Image (tube, rainbow, N blue to C red; front, top):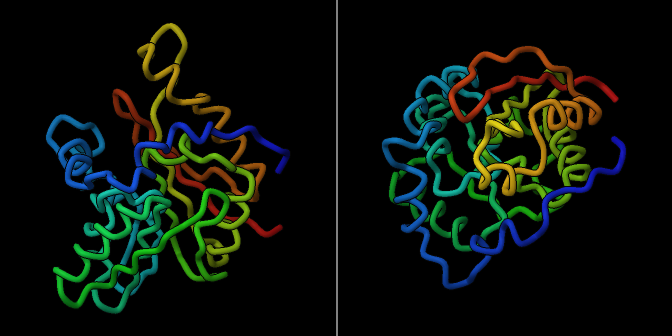
Length: 211
C-alpha cells in the first residue's frame, strides 16, 4: 500500500506508561454507556467465529472482546490477545491464567508488527484500535500475512465527521471511514459488508485477497 502517515506516538503514551494501572482502563472500557460495550454481544456475533476458530484481537486492551471470543472458540480454538502495552499484556496474561484452561494467548506486539505467525488466524479484530496505529502500512501488511486465505478483518472504529463529531473526536481520530477503508483495501483486502452502524461507531468487514 502507499505510505500512510499514521497516528503520532503520543496517542499511545498513556498505555506505555510503566506505572499505568490496567484497572483504571477496565473502568473506562468495560462499563455500561460505552457504545461498543453495550453492543458487545452483537459485535461478537458479527465477527462470525465458530468453535475451534483462531482469532487475533489486536489492540486487545483490557480483554473486553478477547474473553468473549474465547467463550465462542472454546478449548479447541485460539485467541491471540495482542497489545503494545506491557502493562495491558500482563493484565491479559493474569486474566487468562485466572480463567483456567483458556485458549487466550497474550502477545506483546510492536507498533509495526502484531507478531503473529503467518497464516495463523481466521479473523483479525480491531476495535477502536486502527486510529491508534502509528505505522498502519507495516501493520496491515503483517495482518494480511497472519490471516489464512479468505480470512477476514473486522474493523470497529469511531465515526469522524467534520461539523458533526465532537472536537475531541476530530482531534483524536486522524481520518474518517472512507480514508481508513481505502487504506485497508489498498493493503490487500476487499470490503464485504458493513453490518452495523451505531451512533458513534461503525463496523466493517473485509476479506483477505491474494497479493
